[in-house]
Length: 165
Image (tube, rainbow, N blue to C red):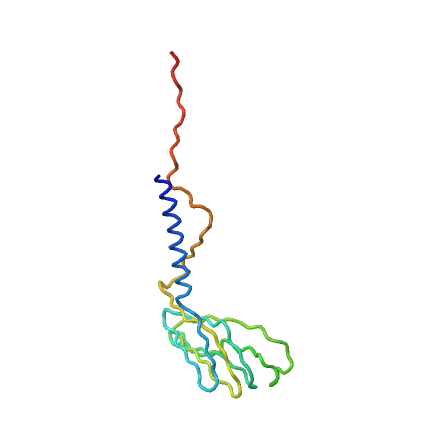
């Protein structure tokens, strides 16, 4: 009876962990923005980071860029990502094959800016995430569909010698 309840408890624990992992994954959804005339500015806090998944451009002759200004002790500004051209009918890339996109992760504190490009439509997909706990890596939980092992084995009687009369 005790072993049966331990198996149920282990399975319930696995279900709770899987639900917690799913809610964490959905807690910070990706956002998408279209930039045509107004610059996009994203502030990344000290204990956060920004993950840019996709950055593309249609039209225009100049390239769209993601510019990062670090606001902490290591100040400075740099362009960290250029847009993928989806329309090759204009500019120096006319007639070229489609490009391969890159992703970037920007740690805070920083100010991220995507300036509009004349005659172009820019599209960006990103997610801002907190770095709760700071430090290093995260906790990874792996669940297996196999039954959970029992903690306490079932006691089986061991045979003993019987005295002869």
